[in-house]
Image (tube, rainbow, N blue to C red; front, top):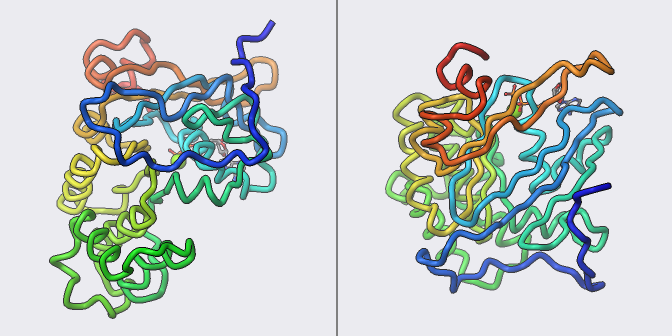
Length: 287
Ligand SMILES: Nc1ncnc2c1ncn2[C@@H]1O[C@H](COP(=O)(O)OP(=O)(O)OP(=O)(O)O)[C@@H](O)[C@H]1O
Ligand SMILES: [Mg+2]
């Protein structure tokens, strides 16, 4: 017996739903993603098993847990980045606004346009600040005025005032915190629906980290954000809901396998978690 959801009939031209600008903040939270029994293996070795989770629209969801428990692996399933790892296989389902993200009809490039990603290490292109932000709109053939898109993206990323007089300078000459905000500007320039952030502040000092956290709060009305973090305070400060993962020894194979232990609103996870393993982790007794 299986409790996988019934596969809907997917029309041949299945696309990825556009960002629906008419949604209003007062609209009740709905699901952006739902996974069912999601498992990922690398070279046949299970890294994470049976993750069933829903990610709500325009909330900030934090993934926490000890190193190697599969947080990045799960995050990468949300925009099919694991497709780019030849040894990775993904089982189970990932639904994005009700569309099966892994349906062969779905174009992974379109997925990554709708679902942007910001990485641990800022990775600006060795191009000008302007060209970094304009890159996505240019590649995607966006018809809008590029100058306007660049300016508004940099404003949203809280970077405009610092760079407006040096837009033609190389992005690699910026500080780490500026580079990370530039990467966020680059990600939002294509008007995505979701931002996936994998430890976006781990290379930044507390001031730059604070800027990124403020920025996340500012843009959360427009984007659904999933952030992986090792910083408990950060998860507690910025997120609405928190998922705690851990890695457990699989008796059968002798290998460590990631599991989703508990998923709830952030206040509950940090103040009154159900599972002892969650409590041990958030109170610093483990991991
Ligand atoms: N590209 C890869 N090839 C092979 N194994 C991988 C790959 N990426 C991750 N893994 C393995 O999958 C498991 C989960 O890794 P993952 O990077 O998702 O963990 P994580 O929770 O993000 O850890 P960290 O907090 O250190 O970033 C680990 O055992 C890791 O070694
Ligand atoms: Mg990781």
